[in-house]
Image (cartoon, rainbow, N blue to C red):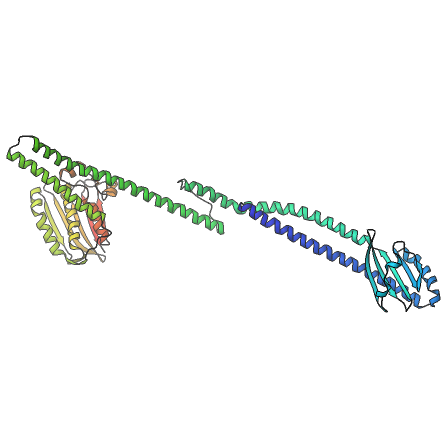
Length: 450
């Protein structure tokens, strides 16, 4: 059953029941009041007759009754006079034998209502003395007719009221359920993947519910976009990984087949073996870096205070020969005594940034490494004089396998994982990688430690 129908019936049915109960109570009380009024009126008339009879001798009782009967007949009241036997009766409807005089006591008035041939009579009897009784009766059909009329009027009023109540109940049920109907339609859209939902908000219960519903749809859209983006990035990662792995594997397979089938001298064999060895190292390096990316959240590593002079001395020794062979200059300006973290990972992150700077820099250029404190944070910067990076590429450059200059990166043996590794290492240390660059003005890569 629909909620609107439940509300409609919930208003109409109790209203009908209450109206009927009230009508029954009003009709009954009105009828009882009218019956009691007739009863008291009859008793007053009976008392008046008694006074007239008590003022004369008993032998004149019949004559007195006859004289009074004409006056009372005009009031629709009829008299029965009993003196050892029925001496007078001007009632055409009441048989004196119907009256049980044994119920009448001295100084009491016995009143009863009788239905005779679908006519209603009020009958009052009084005992004058041991042998005399006076009974008066009055047709009270009018009282019962009023009750019927009142019943018909109540039915008519209830019917009109129910029509009005039904209209009001219908309007109320539709008004109350209209927001729910809108929400139902919007939920249907939401279930089909349409997150463009904007329900009318307000301060009542439905308005607050609509606000929560709007917030939920926005959050679902956000989560869905994140999942889609994650799925796309995962697929791109897999595609790039396949491509990156395929290149060295194809080279290894090609050189191996060439060495197997062709007549090569020793120098050519050594040359091809070196190619195979280099491509194998490239795959191994890629594997290690991917392993770090895959398990960065679950990797347990020991943090401690690392002496930065020692770190930079090791880095300088590592890159000295390559820097000289490339015709570049590495300048290290260290103002930090220690950094709290994992020594191996921090050396790896700084080394990756220096390698990245070497890959994009030309001969006779400088690569600056600055380490310093600022605003209670520690920073390590690697500054190059390369071609710079566009704003669009800055947003993507930390994605695995992404290269700004694909030809140049491949030539230098890069797989596009260095900056992804740096970002992951900084996340593991609770810090972040900041990239600032402008086309034609070089780049600044900053490791920020909290």
